[in-house]
Image (cartoon, rainbow, N blue to C red; front, side, top):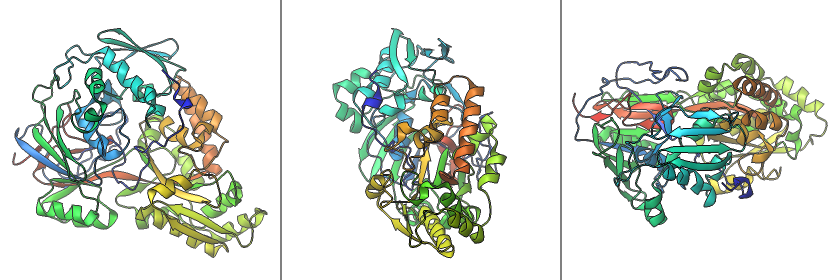
Length: 552
């Protein structure tokens, strides 16, 4: 494969959280049933799937239709090129990977028959394909299709190329065996193997039609139609090759950006399920009487970041002073809960638990009350801060992150320094936050969605490889540790390197972790088996749940 680092860096927009509550493309699943604590995926499950009504079921009306309201409209459906959450929420029902996730954050075979054979000191992965697997046009899923699916994003220089830049070559050993040779023993490669597989012959015939008119996958749902800004329709593929038969005959996705309008669509029955419940509407949905909220902590991360390249915030004492100008715990309580939870590291709680990272230690570093006297002393100790300095804080078009910026600015004023909060549209924000120019920003608030490995959250923020693409801090101190952890297949070594790196960057306040949102949905009581998932945003039909609509 071509080394994608030769391609100009592009922001992984599917991971940048642009104000959408559903922060992954992985699973939003909420069981119906009284208060439910459902970690159902064994190790790695986050244990907080919750719901407030109905009763779960694995069997249901085989001719039922589900109408699901998304926050934004899908734009395209080809997994080789798509790079936004709403598109992936549809595409993930049509396409499959070699592996997928269980109800938690563990990988399980999908198109593969079993775990890969790993050799060559972690640099070679050999995967056997299920010989029954076929695409929706009847063609078998072959090793050549797998090879093509992993090579195309790099060859076509898509925004997804950097997702695969650890692969040196892909070889079709035979029709049902594929071999991946890596440039280095990339620890999180099992997550990469969840990449969607497309039929080479169909996509090459017309990439444009494949993307927006007739995508063909191997999943249990097939594409029917799309009207941009209005609807996407998919339906059950009755000849699905796997053992699973979806209960749902049809799924209609409708984009409704305004939260209160989405809520109204749930109240009137226009929508069976709506995604992203804002804090102000949470209790209103719970009190509807014929609906409930299903939610689980996503694999996301929202944070306050500092420009460590130029300007006063290059000084760690200044950053620490700003940290003591406000109480992050109180801010999250005021503006985020119950739709999200306080987060104390760059890693979502599911990852810190699975890796047994020292979260209590990290919490002690950054969890504290507001202390203006201490902030003033730290500012005084940082001699290079001009007395007339006005800090510039930029935020994206999202109320929660704007409120966080305002909270910081108000505290700084109490400590004797002015601060200006500027809310920008996404285009302007994306240009400014990575510039490193203090005239553009000294601080910014942003969010990120990743997979269930520390690399997904640390590599893109704190390494020199990422500077100017997804990282606006230009903080270099822990870059080597994170890159070395990425290139190791030794779990103990990776854990040690990540623990040291996170401790250092928290002590230096390159970021101040803020919160993680829940994948949250409002759901009518006649919807059964719908579950929120930490990685896939939501699931409709799996081995552990099968959604249906109607009486049981």
